[in-house]
Image (cartoon, rainbow over all chains, first blue to last red; front, top):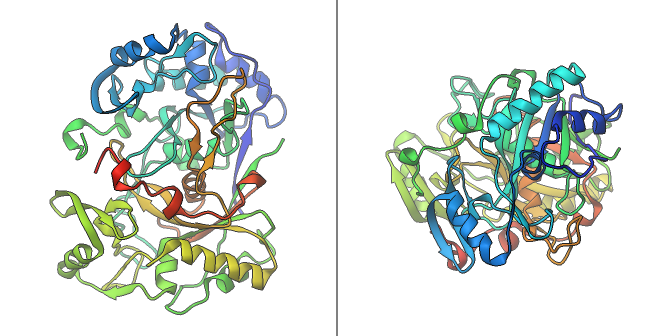
Length: 233
Length: 233
């Protein structure tokens, strides 16, 4: 029976600007759950933004200006809620500007380049812990048509964003119609199950994923849908 | 270290119209991974549709008519692809009509009431295996703005569709802004990680979820966003 394990990494300290996340993650993972070759380490955007100095002073009045500065396009407005496109090409509420789980009087902006953030953590874990892992930076987004938020990947390194099953056949020999699975988003969603929104577990390990998924990749290149092929922008 | 396990249920037989899924799942789960109180059993739409007689004769020409009959609204068209709203309120490609992983010359329609399908499996597992589990019926949907498909919940029983964290506070005592997490969709996405599209594993068990999530619920009531509150319909 081959399964996959979702393992919370508890005991992460409060993250501050300039912290080296790979060092904090390696220390917090410790011996249990540890870090093993082939693990996928999912790190929430919040701690990445903190480490990268993306916290900015903000009060309820100025958050709106921050949102407008971070957005390259506003798709919809309803009251305080703006559905925006960010520089990265993400479509999300309020350009990803977030004032929960941050110091009072501050808001967290998205990392400038979340794929690069993931690479930096991956490289750091390789150097410090001697492990070859995939890394996903996750964030919490709403969706069109469905209530509730889920965690998705905003950056990745060393693990596929999308697995292309084109050309493979299903159990009856028929070519598969649905072919490109956004496994990075599924990994981010799975990790959220052991993080919880209020419990301050910003890192989780997904252990036992298909080894063929562990390759160079990028959320920006593989998941962000260019506006030209998007039916809803 | 409390983690969550994703366990594929291998050895499910080919499902036919009239089959009692609870019996097949209980037999396939066997002793390993077995079924335990508090497990969430994720079953793909395809086998639910097969068991419920939702397979219909179809060829490439007639599939289009099926799609139009199953849809209550077409949101977008691009070539062969129709983005549709189904009777259930789901927005998905081609009204959920699927001709992969089914007998040649046939297509699978969505279950008439996937929440009811989930309840039936849950009740059957309680009666046959003496276990109190949650059940999710999952399907594979595309998304606006992001490439790749992910599995989501189209029906559930005995497990929350959405967990409402409103009123809880984050680690710094601030009220959370993002509050309603679609855990049923995250559970469906997590389960897909051990199913694979081409490997014919239509059932997986998620073991170790937060016990407070195991309650009566419904995808239709909690996740389907009414058109009136939807910004993208």
